[in-house]
Amino acid sequence: MHALVVGAALLAIAAVGLWLTFGLLGLLVTLAVAGAVGWLADRLVPGELPYGWLGAIGAGLLGSWLGSTLMGRIGPNIAGIPLVSALIGAVILAFGIELFQKRRSRQEG
Image (cartoon, rainbow, N blue to C red; front, top):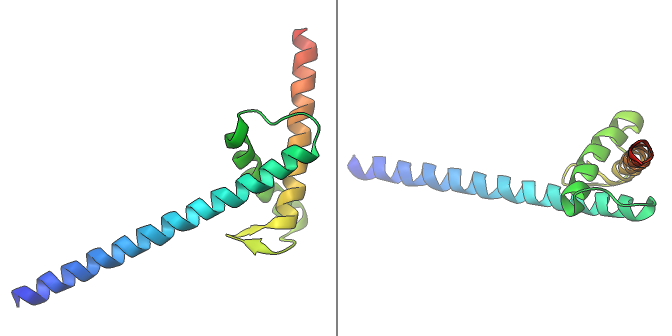
């Protein structure tokens, strides 16, 4: 009986470990795809996104949401991110950030 309890506990620990590993791997892939989308949007729009690669990841994640909301899920999906609508949304977001930065620099200067 004791061996059965220990075996069940080990099986539960292994299942939780696998779930955490694949969950973390999915999160890392999502962040990598969002970073690539944000980086590409940063290259397409004049100027630069603030905060470097963190800004690119944020632009990719927010751009994916914005593009999916405005146009639906267009293009192939990688890690749950629709690439075409995410890129279009990230470009719109990058243009908005660039306009905001230019306006703010004019007001300060």
